[in-house]
Image (tube, rainbow, N blue to C red; front, side):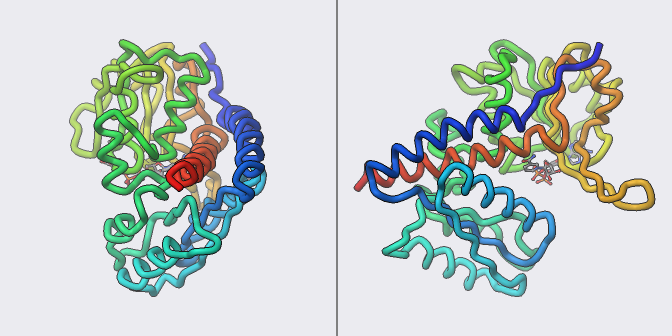
Length: 296
Ligand code: NAD
């Protein structure tokens, strides 16, 4: 068997087309475009590249996007003050505010994320939005988790009654995804197992999976012997391989070449979940603008 490719780029393009029309219609009514402000701390090459992709995608769909660069030496209180001042801006008020992660180690990341007003928290990381998601009444869903669910729904991979195994329990990816897949309705109703670094016998769990999602950050973690024949395998991991044979190549957590012989569907890295993460951010930003507009 050779798995069908879950083409994130193609799905993201379709989302962008729809968003473009919706943003044009919104802008005609309210006489302004939805606005996204991204705060980038420091000069990590990977973060700068993600922020550039977000800005390029925002421009393609007609969002007004701005990046605020902050030096890596900034302290938590000063960064919180910057976010508060963006939120207070009167004239060019941001509908969505995003702080690119990871932040330097000396910064209290939770304090910074808590400073983003929950009604502009387009990354969905504020505790109010995490709470709403856990109660099954989501406002802003974390973009990567939403992107994975969207990929399943768009491809027609049913989740109801299926065994979904997620590896990785971060607040930003694994946990919200577990809530989405275990929730009610389309793209949900799965039986979810959430594995992590302290899970024993990982293969025992992964071999049960109709839908297997790897969100760890460890190249080659998932091999063919860990995958049930015909399963949908979604690779969230992004790892840059350096050293003599790597050449800086990007790979996921799944050993693509062997797993695609066993799986029914597989998402590539790059070109899988990444583009959907960006598309979900655009979608959350439009949603934030609509919510603010309807609340006066
Ligand atoms: P994280 O470091 O916050 O979490 C990693 C998780 O993996 C932890 O919950 C940990 O318990 C688990 N883990 C670590 N080693 C393990 C092992 N040997 N077996 C089982 N579980 C193990 O990372 P994150 O922010 O959730 O990101 C995970 C990966 O996804 C990274 O590679 C990141 O770059 C990538 N990512 C991709 C996108 C995208 O858009 N494609 C978005 C966010 C993150």
